[in-house]
Structure formats: C-alpha cells, structure tokens
Length: 431
Image (cartoon, rainbow, N blue to C red):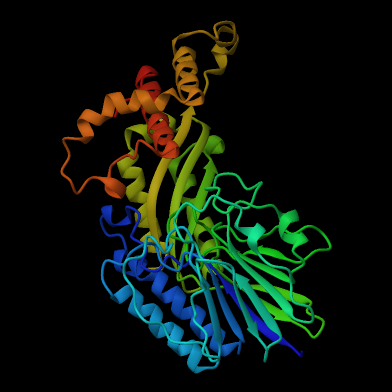
C-alpha cells in the first residue's frame, strides 16, 4: 500500500462537568464549559483538512451518561462529517463510558464500508480495511473497572497488513493512575503489531521498547483543570508502503492551563512578583496563540514577604487577577493563588535554632509530616470535618464539596494551608 494517514485521539470526555471553576466569580465559565466540544470540532476539521484515512478514539469519548441527548447528538454530528468525507472511524469505550455505565444511546452513522463505529465490548473486535491495507484490533470496556489483562486476548497480526491495536489501559510502570486493563510495553511489543493507540493516561507520551512498534498515549484533546497543563491534542500517524510510521503531535485545545511556580526567596517587594508574573504570562500567551489561558500562581520558598502575603492573601490574589486582565488582553484568567512560602529564618539566631531542633515550631512541623506520611490524616480529618460537611446544603456535595476527604491531594493542601496559617500566627503574623 502507498501512504496512509491515521489520526489517533483519546480521552475526549465530551461535556465533562466543570471542576469547581464555576465557583469563582468572573470565571469564563461558558468558554470553559464548551471547550471539549470546540476541541472535538477542531479534531474533525483537522481530519478533513489533512485527508486522513482513519480516525481512532482510544476510549472515554464521553464522561459518563449524558444529562441530556445533546452530548450524544454533538458527537453524531462530528462522526457524520467524517464518514461523509469517506473517513473511517473506530471508537472503543473506556472506564468513563463503559457499556454498563451508558444507559443513553443514539444511532451512530456507519463507516464507509458499512461497519459500526463503536468496537465490541464482548470480545476483541477485528476490522479489516482492505482498501487501506489496515487491520484494527480493539475492544471496548464492558464495565468501568476492567482490571483483567485485556491485552492477552488480542489476536496475532495479519500478515501483509498494517496492524493497529487500540487499548484503554493503565500501562504498568506509570504511577498515579487506576490500573485498568494493566499490561506492559513488552507484552504489547510481543503481539507484533505495527502501532498501539492507547488511551486512559492524559499525559502524552511514547512507551515502546527500542526497535519495536510505537506504543503511544495521545493524551486528552482538552485539559479539564490546572493539573492537566500544557498543549493537548492528537497524534497524526503517517504510514508508508513498508508499514513504517512517522508521528507528529497537533494541538486541538481551546483552553490552555499553565502554572506559574515561583521561588520567592530572592524578592524583597511584591512588585517583583508582579513583574515576574507578567513576564511569564506574556511568554505563555505567545505559546498559547489565540487560546484562553487559565493560570495558577504558586509561591514557595523562604521569603521575607511571607507574613505580609499571609496577612494580605486576598488582596494579593486580586492584584494578580488584575494583572491578568490588564496585561492579558482579555485572554488570561487567574484561577487561584497558592502561598506555600515560609518565613525567612532569623540569621542571627541560626546557631540557637540548630541547637534546638525540637522547639515548638519544629514540633508542629514534625507532627504534620508524620500525620501526612502515616496516612492518619484521612481518619483524623474525617472525624473533625464530617459533622460540619453534613450540615452544608446538598448542592455542596460530591464534586462541589469544599473538600473531598477521599482525595489525598486535597487533604494535604488543606493541611499545608492550615500549617502555614498557624506558623504565621505563632511567628507574629496576623490575618
């Protein structure tokens, strides 16, 4: 076969709910709410413009059941645009849109060869596209927690064809992700396919063993919160007559998340922070091009401004937000300021401090660190906060709760904030 082109995308999470952004006054809620749709439109436009032969979506097209039919109808419209251009589409379900999670359903258009767009969840679906010299191997999730070795069920490659595997997996060796459909790069390499299109991990990356077929996470096409920062998009895969590939990333996102993480130890005036943030913001605006830029500012390190910033935290955040508006040309919104600084040590008392490491301040820090490292913070915070959380209105529950006690990162953020506040007061700071 001559040249063929495949678009590999995953984790679209169409119409995924906002993650607390609508809790902030003046947040560009509508623009962020529509971001996943606009990114999907960008993907469709790109596939048509680049004259791709096949679009692959490796799981989590949806974020779960739709609140109404409009979510499904939107994808139907985009899929119809693709098949009308004679572009094949292959979609597998992931943990978020597994067959047993989706009670809503709409008829999808058929592929140019009459096959279904969605691949089966009952067995590994093998699709042979004779006119392209491509065979697709893929299986949807039947249930959310697919913890078995799905890769073991994938069949041997078909000779003389470009063999493409599609899998939604928590690849072994990648920490911090649910271990759904676990498998190893070696296991995928042993299948003898020409390309593995993976989903589930939102961070783009290649994980193949040297000399074997590419094993690629395309990442999600649109970041949903500040922890999903940087460009998001898809992978265009060009396949030559020898079934060798060339791959390039193409951004599709319409909202870009970035964090200004600064060590404030060298600053003696707040104006220096404002200047540094403005310079960083201008650099990010160039990289973001015409996208909305959502920023978070994190200040850390030993700082002589620590007490002042702790006393004036709301005013400081307002100043940073004003800088975002004034110098961001209507394209920047500050999501949050986090102050993780500590008070600058009194150098004249260094020897005394070293001789008394078990003083009251050090004792507090030791207790906090022990609490976090032992995992005891979960039970302790549940005992302290659950009675208060139960008194809140029902709308402040689930994802809208002020703190999710089952989320380790959120618990530790609260502990760090409280520790900083306590130390500031003990060292003479006031709020």
